[in-house]
Image (cartoon, rainbow, N blue to C red):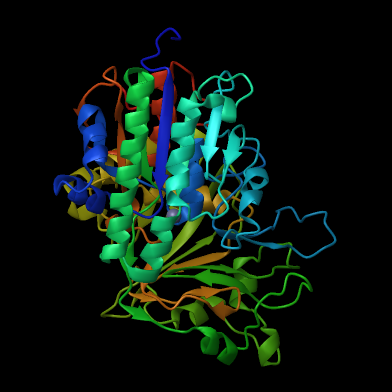
Length: 506
Ligand SMILES: [Zn+2]
């Protein structure tokens, strides 16, 4: 055992798309006896705040690295989102038009290993002294990666982890068991989108994961590794059911907005839009982000180049409540994100902003609004204290807002917009309308999704147990990027300097 280490190895299971509320309810009902055993033996938190937007990327990548998006030429993960347009600012030297990355395309998902830049490290890369196993975890840099014939081989995900303890020679030439093993379950997300979070098939799938986790525990006990192994469980985001579904294709056609075609470099906009919409528009060229003025006087190619105000146009989309965009003078180390909020009753548009300064752990942000606090932070004693016109760190925002809607969002929005690969305008209906729109087509027609800043989508479980060396404690809040530094602390390893989360060990 390394000095200061509490355990010799860690196993992390990431379930995709399970709310803390739902997982803990199933545990309390006795349906997940193995997860319950792990939670009760160690650290348990039913109020862990994930990244915003609450979409698989950034959320899942941020768990594996312990970091966030940011100004990636200098800091942070280079992946702002599940979908992004490869625009560099200053303009790319590439002669080709910017490509669209979409991790929903299964043939592209492994590109995440290159897309996530070298400024951040995976948990595997942060512990190079031991064997690392990635079982179906697509962000596997630094690990031995195993994936079955089908990504839906649920048993296989857990079986490979058990095997690596029973027969490590199958995976590692030094025949030693893994220091770090991570398993990633995608199926839960697939069923949530198709059937919903209250469908028996979705719930049964979580129950099945628990059963397979039980097999890992059994293996650890029979091989004698249980007492010095930490077992962790986390999810990347929660979910919600949208109230209305609308096909946006006719709307864009009517406005003369032609979807971007990366192969040709033609078109007026690129967009992916569940209930949070991410819009890209060309500036001087498709390699440039547009200025505010360029977006106010935009000439769509499908309407004879008649000038339209894109901001006004986007407010016409049903249910839009929030709008975010960068200020023209933003710099990576200092800048402002404009927020507009539309009050449902009066239809009045209320202005606000988030200002930021600094990088990484040192980033500080402040939330400014005129006459109405559209995050309703002022309605709560703890969060109201932070409306003091001062700049605050991620830890301060977490402490102030972990118990209400829009947890930590003031910190998260600038981290997203600093990334040159982020979009130009975000709009959100807050789950009221969902559009299932991706790059010119309506592709999703179910109301079940995740992306918004409310608690049902943002709050996930955080569990670390197993070994009796792990302190037994329930913590009232934490964030998903605390998982990597907590597991590394249990192993007695110092996290990489890019890690923004912190160990929650006492
Ligand atoms: Zn996900």
